[in-house]
Amino acid sequence: MVGITKSFPGVKALDGVSMELRQGECHAIVGENGAGKSTLMKTLSGAYTADAGTIAIDGVVVQHPSPKSMAALGVVVIYQELTVAANLSVAENVYLGRMPRTRIGTIDWRKAEADTAALFERLGVTISPKQQAGDLSIAQMQMVEIAKALSQQARVLVLDEPSAVLGDAEVSRLFEIMRSLQSEGVSFFYISHRLKEVFEIGQRVTVLRDGSSITSGPVEDFTVDSLVKNMVGRELANIYPERDREPGAVVLEAKGLVRGDRVRGVDLTLREGEIVGIAGLAGAGRTEILRLLAGADQMDAGTIEVHGKRRVFRGPRQAIRAGIGLLPEDRKGQGLFLGHSIRFNMSSGNLKRYSAGPILRLRKEREHVQRFSDSLRIKAPSIDSQVGGLSGGNQQKAVFGRWLAADAKVLLADEPTRGVDVGAKQDIYRLLDEFAREGLAVVFVSSELPEVLGLADRILVVREGRITAELEGATATEELIIHHATDASGRAVAEIPEEMTKSR
Image (cartoon, rainbow, N blue to C red; front, side, top):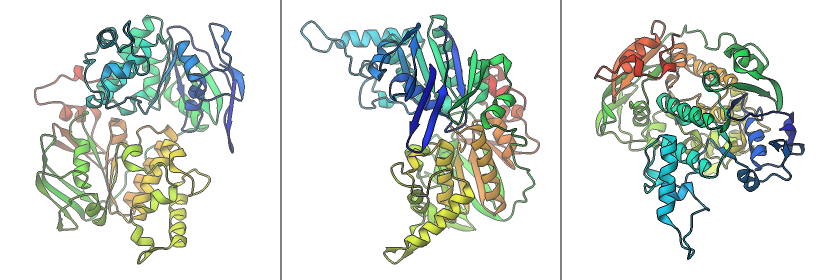
């Protein structure tokens, strides 16, 4: 790609970006949200038409790139929001729109399923071609997307934030598959906010900032600090706030929470002005605990008290009225009204605050939302901008704003920094700290242990639906968390993904 330029109304998304990819190489692309990473890859795929610049494959310039012509040339993009059709079989997804035919023109189901099985054998994964895609895990859906790309004879695979929805073990398996495909000559563009992955899987890296290429070269020429400095244009020192908060009175107390086999007798206490981190392996029950506290799921047994008063949550409405707000792990699917404005999203948690009987007081709503938007530093033309057009970090801030506007007393945040860049992460850490200092009880789930250790006053370690340890954030270590997070059968530390065992 040479001199790629692309503008949208009011913004130049790409400004003369040049980049190359070699056979069998993994070229990582990093940058803050809004830096132009996804726009560049959509231009490569033909989904966007560049205003200027050229794309060449094997030295031959591609004239009028389109998704169909680029796919025919072997360029396939796997987006962060997977495009699996849940109601179709795995084989139908792999050959969607390209189902093999018999001599008489009917669908050749036997060939479709046999060819799909052969693709999964090549990938080293076990998925039945006949299985309904909606029953698969996110990791398996990603394998279906990769199999679909390989069925199109893909030579260049673009992976846009593939690890954002995967656990550590699943990411390790994905990297094994990528290395195997690289040995066959398949090349990758890899976009990720997790910079440690750049050094683990990439051979070269390019940093984009504000639509321009800032620097590029072999990964061994960089460190995490140097990448961050190039991404944000400044040093990010002391990324975590000072942990000198003083916890106050008990806000919420839960006893004996049970939901099936995912939550098994959980007791916890949350205090004003405190940040509590919940750590554990994927599937340990971390998300399920938050959903019970937020009324999103119904508990089979147990009690919840808020400010000493017993509460029964038959749904999120009752939890919100009790002052509990949830930032769900899937912010786009469960946390936001993507087709609506920032103002609508932030005021929707407590419309009574802006109402006089059945009438919504629009002026009061706008004034409040504008104040919260300014304090959260949401980057948008106005509070009437559609929230679906914001970067991941600003979308997350809009969800924070909803619970600020609703006067929440307990904030439950599930993977609050997933899919956001390093600069936005620091903003979110600052916000969580500010919320706690204003008297909120803050609980967050994170799969990144340095994040838990750097932010939490207390750490609850979850294993198989139970809290197995309560640790002081100031003295806990990654090794200690892993010890309590591993299963009761004595799973060896060597079996834990390497990135979870590195010293702090």
